[in-house]
Amino acid sequence: MTSPELESLTIIKYPDPRLRKICEPVVEFDASLRALADRMIVLMNQAEGIGLAAPQVGILKQMFVCAIIGKPKDSMVFVNPTLADLDGEAEAAEEGCLSIPEVTVTVKRPVKCRIDAHDLDGNPVAFEATELMARCWQHECDHLNGRLIIDRMSPADRVANRRALKRLESRFGG
Ligand SMILES: [Zn+2]
Image 1 (cartoon, rainbow, N blue to C red):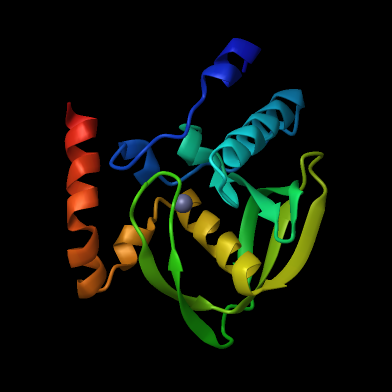
Image 2: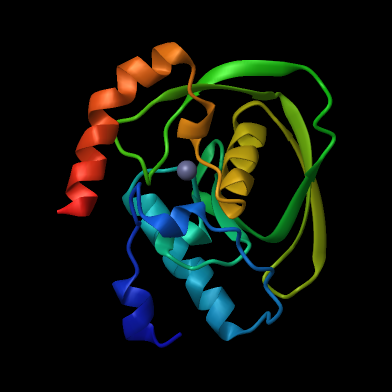
């Protein structure tokens, strides 16, 4: 990807159909992948988010970036991630999504998880996390499978978010 192409990337919004695609694994760990990750980190920080998946900038590849909780200036990149150890205790908490502004959904997720992935050089990495960071990884991995928090809405969430979703849908159509 050329640098003007990278510069032109923005965070796409629901109901853009690219948010519903299953992402392809990354096979080339090259300079362009690193440049994409850098651009995603800039966009995530500008939007004051803690995670951003490649499909959210319209790139259908299995990659996401996330902030390190407590260290807002640092971030991590996960390529071709898979989650494990999801069988522990689950907890419900409110989540938002940079691609679905003004929508909040209470999502129940395992409190702890493990992630196996590759770094930008293609080296395998594995980490464990709890609480907010584990939640963020699970939210971002959902994106790589075309899954959004609005798929997990309770009837009450559905009512509460109806207007905001309608607004996003009409904006996209027009
Ligand atoms: Zn999201």
